[in-house]
Image (cartoon, rainbow, N blue to C red; front, side):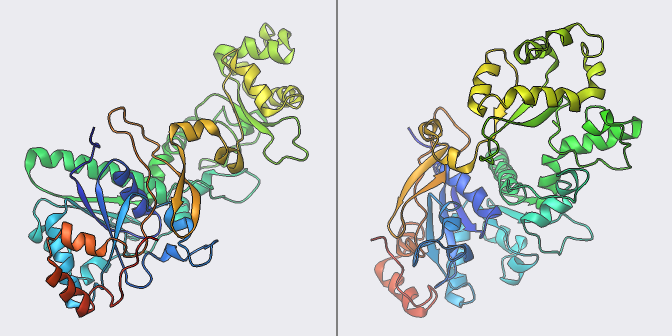
Length: 425
């Protein structure tokens, strides 16, 4: 059975994280992703945070699986000729260059559309049109300008960025949806179009519940925030809320057995109203079920700190997994804090393909994420990232239809960087 995106060809002009996240997702679904790289160095992440000498870094390999690599000197006249040829035969062109770079290369949207009226030109940008549109943006800048940092952390402390790459990877996922949507529309119109995803916009989209709370704040205090029960007044903007749940059901991270020596021995616990009676029975506070001061959600709002302190006395007698097993019997929402080590070793994630072990000719076996989106008729096979220029000749012959003489002509011209493409060992 074929893949969902079989027959779709992607010209991948992306680098670092936001763009490669997008194109790797499309490649997982079966698109032929041709990654264009600078001769000699390639994507800058090949050498960043390198942990194995003379091998591509995990930063690169975990973002560029299932792709083919071609090296082209984009400043060389013959290199530009190659790129124009690839634009003509590709369905999608994806880039995350800084503002104006693509135009300076001679590949403005007008030129790209002239070469191929059916192509979709997809771009990651830092900001949309406005005062900051020409500014360069990285992950943490996106988190700060998209509303995430101002609402993350504890109210007594400074703003915090999150370890989840919601600026880069989050925007890459948004862009992938835009590309697939444009491809679908093309089946009806026959025309390509521009697709853009701004990192600030993507982060704000992921922070929509905080935008919700900003509007609620105009009508009174946010009662599900712990500071309400502690008698702390609210300011003019949504505050940092620590570990409060964003869904309206009070929640908090609680210590579990072993927390003194294990920094991840914690459990997230939600006091969902429909299971309040079960919570009281589990922790030994049956009297709270009928006590007017605890029986209703509104009555409990002013006592959330005391309630969670009491629940924590119970969770500290159990490991996080023991607590989760007991609580799940009563449908009490909870979740253990899982470390990256625990996730890397989780056999269930291996079985579903969420975590995958891949063999690489230079660095050996390594773990990478698999496709988080599962299609019943299009299972994803995760393949290793390409070596620099590994598929250059293959792309010239199979995609552009060059014969041996023409391949030799381009190699000798220096348009491919003047070096023989690397090959897998």
